[in-house]
Image 1 (spheres, protein in one colour):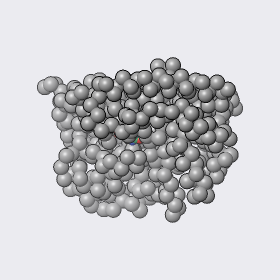
Image 2 (tube, rainbow, N blue to C red):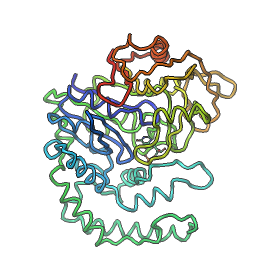
Image 3 (tube, helix red, strand yellow):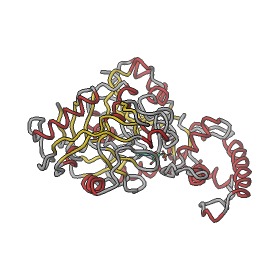
Image 4 (cartoon, rainbow, N blue to C red):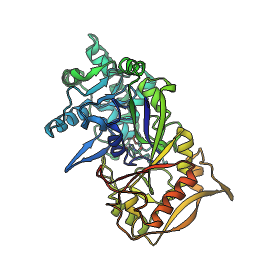
Length: 435
Ligand code: IMP
């Protein structure tokens, strides 16, 4: 099974980290291929809890090489902080981590731009993680203001960054005329100092040097050598910049569409795609979420599921499982099988609802609308299933689940048209049911 991918099928936070960690022992390499420090995973191993943002979850397995590929946007300070924390926790990093010299580097101006343009005019705010992700990808596509990690080691880096800073200072100077300072946007008065930024980033570059490599070349050699490679998606498919709920999305292709572009491996290498999906729905930030429950049900799911953002600590918006949205992500990603997480959270509901179709402008549909404005107008049509009261956290087999929970899983599989292969009933590795 050379190329396997694990991707989120909703709006992120599907607990992919645990699943990647579980599958890692069967792989030689784990690759993170898009996104940046906007992602957050918690991996529980034994009595230890680890928080990861940029480093692939495979890092806890000493035989595995972890690759941060070129499609990622890199905030060097966050990466170094993560390396330091894991090292202090006794995790071996030195030999197991590679960072692509093609990753695009996040600078202080990206964070300010994120704050400035998170909301423009009267539209709903995107509600970004404020990590500079979108602005860094914007510069990547724009090219002339972009810096890749490999550029930090080039002799002309100082001149190049000075030119970029001059352009950015001019841009911010212009913005100052237009933007009311009462918006309280942090840092708008700051004029970037080229010397200071060069020093800061050259220091990061030195500390990152042991990890920096041409990971595309490394991965292509691994493909030629028939290595087993696991691709770890960040965010969820519905946050994909092209196929998600635009503009309330992230800056990268967070659906399966991003795997080859972000890592450089050829399409035909990916043989299996596992879609990770929560037993309910959550969303952080702005944008439509048809099955959101702005009521006691949503509060109960949030409380039981501890649905607070790992990165931004924002409470997540919670609601019932949306089979229309997930069926779309599954088809979009060519997903082969499902991993259903957080099933234990739904215990104690008398009844559970699943959205099986939308009503849009008087018409019933199972298509996921391309427009967020249309998605705001849909009325979710629900099917009601019996709930269960039992605590699922120590259940080890599918037949050990209460009948109502088994029915719920089967119904989701039926509606999505894919088998459920893994069920997660708690954060520990042991709290996993393989079917
Ligand atoms: P950005 O990725 O920081 O630009 O944020 C864009 C949107 O994606 C916002 O709604 C964020 O809340 C959301 N988002 C980004 N990363 C994650 C994630 O890892 N989990 C869930 N939502 C995310």
